[in-house]
Length: 355
Image (cartoon, rainbow, N blue to C red; front, side, top):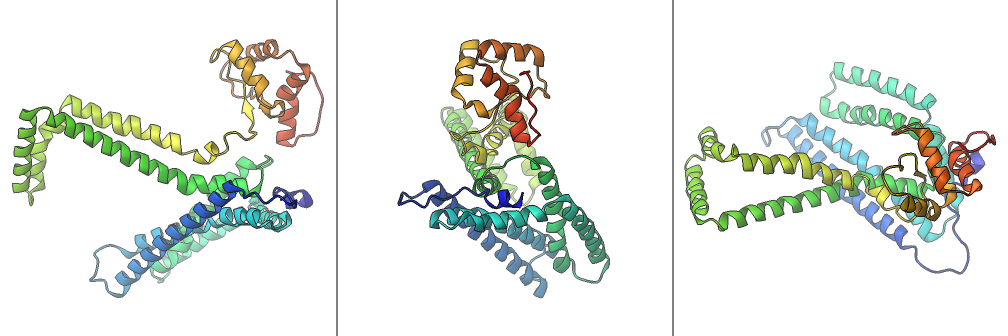
């Protein structure tokens, strides 16, 4: 078991091949850049908190939340280092055993027998810190990070337990992409959407001179009530309550924004497009026509097809018979209905008829 885990990292060819592996270059560069950015932001927050501690007259904010945010940002930055590290090992051609031993050590630390006692200790430590005379800004940040991170790590371990996760470089790369690249792309796309919406609003107003004049008068009135926000709000309320404005606001916040977030949230998985990934075909019948389904089933590697009948989104028996009609190859059917799941889940090999 340990030996197989040690060599889970992809072997690096020791041939005379000198081609640079560009995906690893981008993974290393972006992960390192994200680490530097987040860590710098964390240090800046900590410095701001210390200024507040030693000179409370500078700011009016509570100190503890600043340090909590600093600790959370620092933890996120350190979680990016494995992605950069494994990408660097790939680039410099270091032996896979180096990365594998680190991965084996991490796997041992993430077992429930280790995590559950640690979570209990962290909860007790947090209770002790909250009751002690120790300043909140000094003791709570570390405890807060552990109290949030360890349960998440435990749930993640229970989810991936027994499943092949591929190389450590790929696993940490997907994690780092979801941690920083996904939110960054989401924020950029939402800012672009806001700019487009504002541009369309300005264009619409400019095409209606009467409305443009009305907006200018409204702006002057709001300027007069700068120190009275309630009166300024009463001026713009009739405009905000217009059905068209309500429709645009709700369409943007409850429609477009969630679509953007769901699009970029799995960006780490999108980066794996073109690689051999498992595809579940238990919910295809009725969604695509037979000929297209047959082409997909024949084009996808047969050892990466699954029938997840435990969903079930439809009648599993009917879908099974439909797939049998599309794939006359008995070996492909055996792999799809049984062999691939046995290999993926690490179950003891038991041969039986497909389906």
